[in-house]
Length: 251
Image 1 (tube, rainbow, N blue to C red):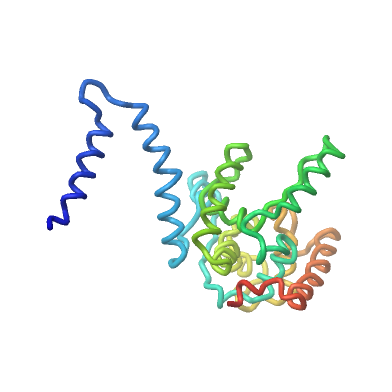
Image 2 (image 1 turned 30 degrees about the vertical axis):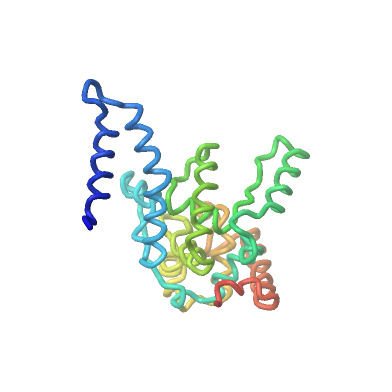
């Protein structure tokens, strides 16, 4: 049996599909092919690869480098990150992380109802850790409905192809913690002069406290608001431990 025959047939079909009849260039067909590649095989391939290997960087990091902004980033495995930081993030950002499938519909519904009551106020975020990870891995910080649509699609892929532990590990490594510090290791070194694995629960809570606005809120010498959030998140770390809200990353 000629095992190469099916591949040669696919190659001939692909060549004909891309080049057309030769009379004129099929630009619409090519544009559709490029869009399809960026929407389906490329994200799936990258997600499968990054399930097993450290993530080298993100589009936002690359954009920062191109625009001559500082970037500090070092990948750390889950075992090199203190449990308190993962618990702080789950407690502060996404307490249903272990039981939802990428979207917290209860939070989304509450955010919409709150916006209906106060339409002049900015719609509060209801993104899960999974959504934020998908956004960080493939997109840049540019708000638009198109980006939200891509984020939702990528979140579905991420939840389907990665275990929860890998999603949380990626998030803790690539999340923007302000001033060019991406991930827990860079933030621990630049804010507290230590490595990620030596963070105390209080320091973990402080980092989680500044997540909503890391360039504005201070991890070192915080004001009253961040100090209050830190105390609140320390309490939530205890709740996460007590109620086992991080059970899915312990498997």
